[in-house]
Length: 128
Figure (cartoon, rainbow, N blue to C red):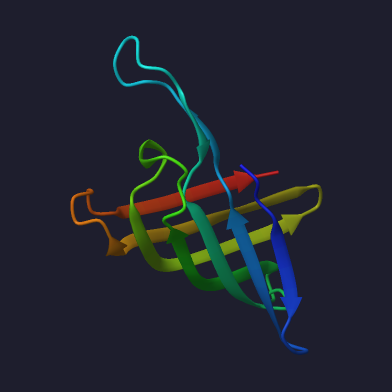
């Protein structure tokens, strides 16, 4: 994945943080003898509104929206749908450790009616 995270200052109290995920994929064939499919998957773009100052207990948080664009270079690498939903992140830096979680949910809002509906939830805890 190519995954840049870019913060933008909105004012003295708030930031807008963007996170884009460009999946570079290699999918094995579904049946024996079927070749691999290589290419780009559906791009996800998240925005988080986040206060510049951490909470009194040291937590940094942000809430916003996530959009998944139907950009796959091959139908086997994407959903064939445009999807939208809420996203949130919370993290705390404590000494050398950073702990937190990223959560989002996507539901399809447009795209091919012949493709399966999208209802994807991500709960991604992290410790660095």
